[in-house]
Length: 341
Image (cartoon, rainbow, N blue to C red; front, side, top):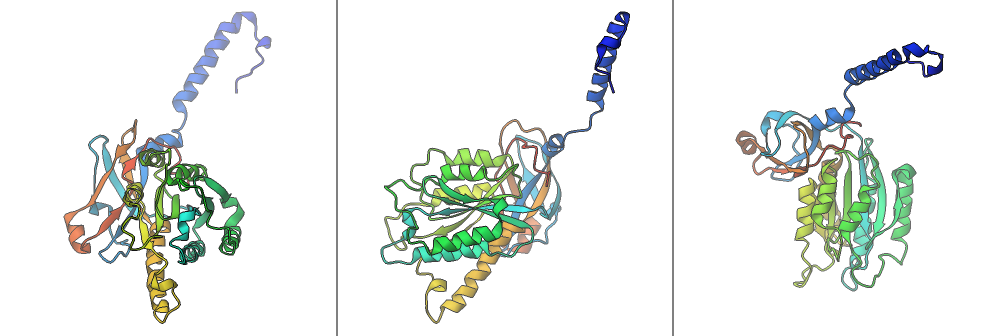
């Protein structure tokens, strides 16, 4: 330890003291351990979900079954493992007027049934938060309040006749809201996700989809969606293709679209059977969010977001028959937190 009381040193030894100080400082810089960010930037955890032709999640692959190609940045696959980190999920519930559906439909009841089903998922390795939105985030239930508080609020909303909120037009700004949703994730990692329950109709977001993707690319946060169909069979319905492509580019998956006439939510003889089918499909969907695998990849220094091209080897594709791979299509600059939890 260097004594900071320089007044006790003889005048003739001042130069020697300063030389000693600079020597010790230089030695400490040379000998300091590598910061976590340095390690994280070299080894990144890429969340990946592989499904078979029936949509079931595949976990039997190895790192040798993947091909990772990036012409801009040198990459190398190191391992393929189950992601055992704690998963945090922000549920973004669209409560704008279009979620009413057609006059006389019961779409909102279906919406609430689905979001309450999500909130009831049994998982010891997950945390959930909630944000209600229209053209902006209206209210939140954050992670610190716990799952019981989230369920209680959803139950209150399901019985509140003022939901969904009737706006004055341009009342659904999904991409602006997604940027706000990311702020609920302190020190985000690739184990974190945003789950949007919406009809996918964006009305005038100032934020462009590619801007949100760039924001997500650093920590590799994925976006998933439960897509509602408020206008089934309508030829003039807005196009949700852009939103679906956005979700897929982030590495997430889309469940649906689901409309008010879905047999699982109707009071009929077929509702029980249809309910079992949709429950099984939702279970597979949840596993993609909470029980995904990760590829540990080694990358060189990234100065700006880079596109990722990931595929399966020919032998793996033949074994699985029409598999699909879901993964973030872009790696961002190192956030310094990806290996921290």
